[in-house]
Image 1 (cartoon, one colour):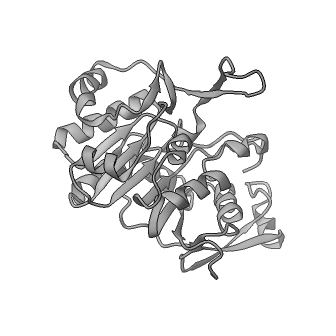
Image 2 (cartoon, one colour):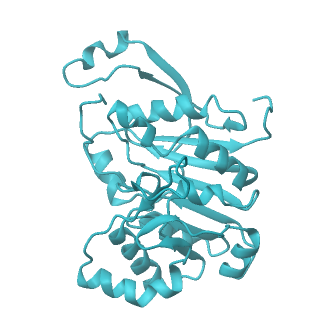
Length: 294
């Protein structure tokens, strides 16, 4: 996708946690710039407002800074002790970044009661819909946090997370916006620290340029092993209707990706992408010791 094209379809995490609107607040010190992440609100319809009223106290974690800010409140850390206290057990915890409508994470929680799940989403309707789905099934192994993912992983205790999922993140197609993409070296470093030994970060996208971005960022980072088994090759230039016949002669990037993750349900969003002829690219990166030979 070129930097002048708009996304062909809103993503599953169209307003995902790493892409919350940033506002500059009054600096605590004249030299230091302080950023807060601001909640993306939308009016809830009657059904979603009822779900929020009925289930927020059960499922929505009170860890955000408040006043519509999405950064983590001062003094909070996602520790093993907090996880034990919140979920009431020491089962493995899976964190999904940008849960959208919650279809995937709720289905996974229902299918795996032996595993704990944390859904990260910033968009009010998405949070409310996730509350609705979880509440209808009276699930006890899922919680939701309306916070910026990048901020949360900065204060997560090392070795406390089993897996991290990021499915169909916002592609931010314009080159000048690539720095806003969720898959970035800094977040990868914090996720690496948060994962248990051998834990994985699962990523999926239906945007070729984003698949290339994942490859360019992750395959060269120390501490990560791409455990995919499928050899893929994508042209480095945009391929559209006007130049599709030239794709074979364009410079390509070769990389490895994974089979479709069987734990990801076929959501309405993914189905629309498949119906539109888009190819889904799955990646699985395993956290390994830093400086380990890949």
